[in-house]
Image (cartoon, rainbow, N blue to C red; front, side):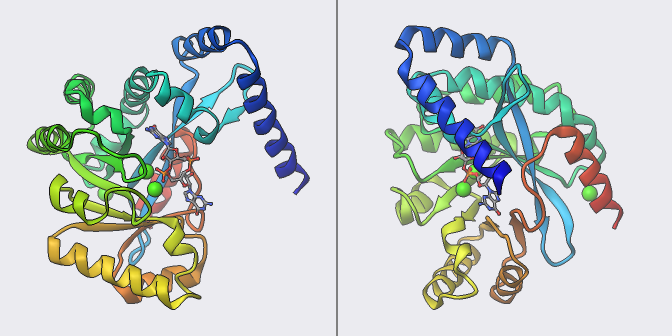
Length: 278
Ligand code: C2E
Ligand code: CA
Ligand code: CA
Ligand code: CA
């Protein structure tokens, strides 16, 4: 608990320090951190909860400071998005991921790699050329890639978003709608965007074994996904009872601390070797 409090204090300190300094100085330093490759991928396993085998991972960005401290996206993502740095950062993160887990993915063609995109990525076709440039030559095939679009931020141009999604799907990339039920899009996004997978937000999973409303909501999401021919993944699973409820409701894929937290590539590759061997 003392360690947790220490980490929390550090995070707050970084946030305060960052917001107090003159804007341009903070920005120069952020750009230097991008150039130094300080924004790196962590990997959280996504599991098949029936077989307990690995299905793939979600790539989650971390800021590794030169002193070794690891900073979570809550501390820098809004800044990166508001200042347009997220495009360079995502490109770099995808490149590093292709290098770090390319061999693992080449050896295990069923594994999926999920990458978070930001609403701004759906205003510009550049994301399609980035994905092509990075993964064309990598051991990770387009069929192994999933891009996640969050419902938390509104998509400003739905027609363009739909086109970009269709271009990615034409390559073989799959598209997941993240944080379903918490944001702006709701049913409209499901209908208009043509997504392949829906991710059930942790908010519903937290109370799934105690609250009838959550159970009913997850149950209807499963039915919706089935009827629309979409896959479904539960996130934020921390307890055995939640796994049991999910299995009863017909959900077969999940991620969460119950299995593993996001981790650096070396640990993820070991994790994959352990779970593949089971
Ligand atoms: P998200 O996409 O919904 O990712 C899931 C978050 O839940 C991650 O937080 C993950 O570490 C955390 N999580 C997973 N399992 C559990 C669990 O069992 N319990 C709890 N309490 N938490 C769990 P993280 O890594 O701090 O990322 C936060 C958010 O930052 C992400 O939410 C996503 O919206 C954003 N983000 C992360 N990486 C990227 C990125 O590369 N690009 C963009 N655009 N956004 C990113
Ligand atoms: Ca496999
Ligand atoms: Ca996500
Ligand atoms: Ca999510």
